[in-house]
Image (cartoon, rainbow, N blue to C red; front, side, top):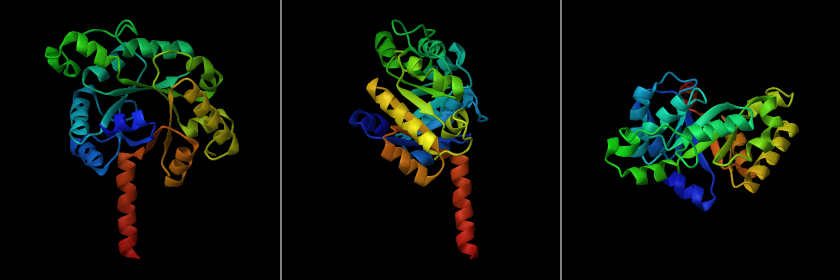
Length: 250
């Protein structure tokens, strides 16, 4: 997958959140060239049952399937990985203890204590060699979302936890935590982002951010952010539709 190829080269990767329930939409966005798709089970309408078909659609089009789970629980994280997610994104991480819990839920021993079942899609329903499966599973990406003032205050403790691949910050959440709500390009926000990026690099952890504006995405790329989540599929469709209507009516 192009996601892994770029990550290995130290290049930034780009992908949207997805709230659609249609595998064709995921597949089409993959063919368009997005490196990853975040299937949203926190704020989207999907369930684990249909998310596995969305993962299949991502794989068909060469796109890295990530699931954002609803909660930092063994059940939510384990199920997402069982159905074949190559990465799991965990929201509302505020302390190192919560980060360690996410690692434990996502990794098999000796890295964690993820519940073991080989009769799942990720293990080819027991067809895959068990030891190969355990090794492969422990290499899947773990993305932690830091949200709120407590997370910012505990940032250095959180990134000291072993097993984290990406630290993800929403600029809106960050602006609120810094007392400049909604001002995502405020100097305080940009300064903190640069601090987060540099600290993550020192720990060999990728940094990630959400944006829905091209100019802001370019800014984050220039700042060295590795994992850029650009907008949401339904929003992208709506904006494209509005552009077509505007262009044809003026």
